[in-house]
Length: 325
Image (cartoon, one colour):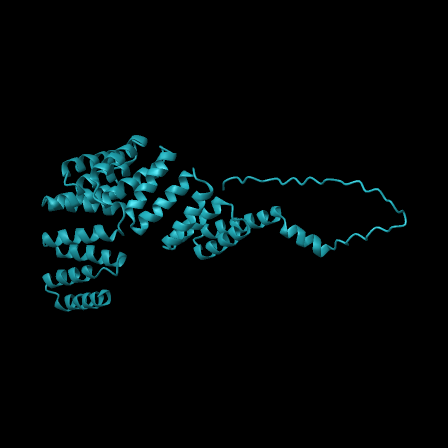
């Protein structure tokens, strides 16, 4: 947690000297200060409010640590009500909202944090991430650029900025940005993998493969890189190589439904129906809402001559597609 600035308030009292012209005059009795009034004065003091706000903020942090984002949001809001001048509280509030998918609320909270701390690169990055997750990529790009302007070595900002450029088809900007990310961390496999994806999306498959191989030199078991090479092999019709790379990717993560699904489809092309069924069944366990997998399972069983099993999966396919329509 960032350290707080404690503002001391100094009160200067001017003492007036009163000359008693008439010694028989009586002084007014001073108001008796009760314990209750002392407590009220203490609670109304700025220092007390800041202390309470800090405790509420810490409770919010504890809730967020365990994924209790509703409770965290409540505590952060209570903290801000006591002390509205804590940019860290707005930042954490925004993160909690983002975790709940409440991106408009998150954006509002991050903007408040930036309003109070205009040079906070982290707040700008968080704001950009909220825009990114909401799919507002033009605002995400401008916000990530502001992040980098404040902190030219903000590594995650380069990564998401590069991907955001890709989302709007600005591949040259994406490539330039992701190359900068690699300059900051030349031994990071995912940086090369992301650059390879952009090259591939831009139709530059040879350049993509070069970057993927660089990623595998750093991390031979890098899941997304192995998967993406498998996709490249599929594009060129090299099914055997695609299967080999998908299986390598599965060694890193057997529960990746996309990989298992693509593997199953390639096994179908090879007429290896048992292998296809195994891959499809693993895929559907990880992604039970993907209707297409049920259809392909039906096709695999049908190809094996197992009509009853095929009909069962075709029925499931129809039920799933009705729910989504």
